[in-house]
Image (cartoon, rainbow, N blue to C red; front, side, top):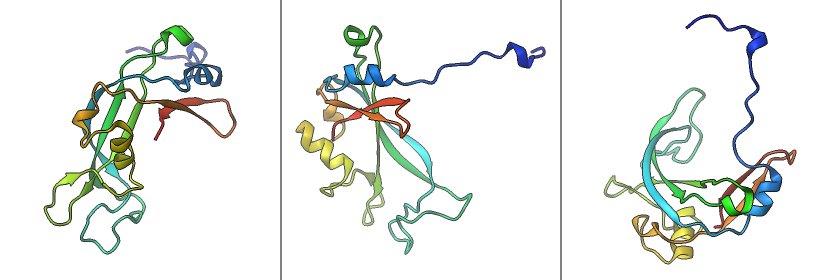
Length: 150
């Protein structure tokens, strides 16, 4: 691959939106375009039969878990001159009786709030529904990203 000289390095801008772009995008209502699942390594105990369920695992330990990944259709070209896609991740739980993974329907759960807001009973029915997006800013106010308004 050759050599790489420190003088040849190029700064790569951070992803996401600028605070100014986020201001313009806030309140947009893109359609939900894609809903998938992904496995990930959780640093929390997800075993429903464990006495430490929900607690952080010891340093360096993880458990396999599942979550739903929800993507919007591209939007924003008319507002900021380029398209963006907002992604929201929703962690799933294991049903202690059946052992199957699924969304929590507790009133404070992100999945339940999304179902109510969109008027659906499951993740598959979210596709094609509009969702309002809001901006989040980093503590120093220099970075911004969009999130679902739930």
